Length: 296
Ligand SMILES: NC(=O)c1ccc[n+]([C@@H]2O[C@H](COP(=O)([O-])OP(=O)(O)OC[C@H]3O[C@@H](n4cnc5c(N)ncnc54)[C@H](OP(=O)(O)O)[C@@H]3O)[C@@H](O)[C@H]2O)c1
Image 1 (cartoon, protein in one colour):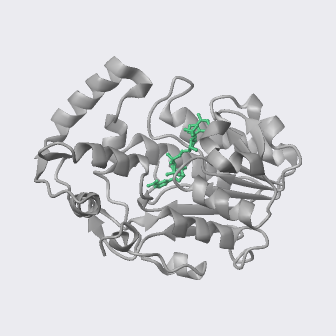
Image 2 (image 1 turned 180 degrees about the vertical axis):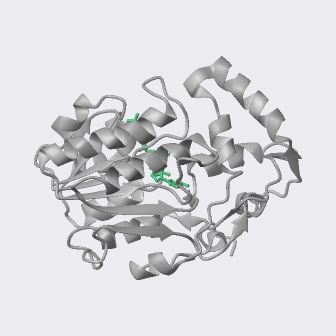
């Protein structure tokens, strides 16, 4: 049995489709099974929450492999970014050790560092340390920006593209190597027990990057082309965006359309010096963003 957290997310959904298609027995730790769509009838459901470590014990019963994708880029009523992306991973690792789990595959991020510039990057560094210091046979993936048509980030951009001008926080100069969630899912499948690269994935860290270096502004322009909308981009000072989004979050709480913690992530470059080499080691040739979005 494989336990998958974050199955309803950008990476989780394409990964889950591949797992169920290959007949792998999967249990999903989810807050709301309806968000699994049609896949929910093909998997076991463990209702749980990163903020509720007691839910981990039941979810881990009889599990040999854990794929831990769940995390958050905004504070939730059940916990802060630090608790849900950092401490919860440490708790899940401890519970997995107790439950006799054999393999633990974890999603960190490029640039994870306890001295990093954003809360998520710092929380991921602590989480990664908990995974690599554990007794579990682990694999760490550190991706650049991961996207999929219709994901949270592209949905926000599509809504903003209805305005006469598209606002962009900061200079838009931060560079990324965007990688498609389906390519990431293929990398993960190769690294799983029974996968084509299972052996070399043990105790390894893979940096997952797409084939091009694009700035935040170039990514927005590519997305606008895919929506079929030409719009001028207006760069807003970070301090103004921060004040505005913090006020929106204060007024609307978890329903905020965007938060400062999310916007800030797009100001921090996520670049791997290894380019696509690690994805290729896993047998995957990542596609360019324009091709995936149908504007290549
Ligand atoms: N996307 C990127 O650009 C990127 C870059 C670097 C690293 N990563 C890492 O890769 C992993 C997967 O990313 P993603 O883009 O697929 O994430 P995502 O689309 O934001 O999805 C997050 C997943 O975590 C679940 N989740 C959130 N809070 C939870 C909670 N309190 N309890 C249980 N589940 C919870 C969500 O479930 P609900 O359906 O209940 O909300 C969802 O399935 C994450 O660890 C992320 O930090 C992603």
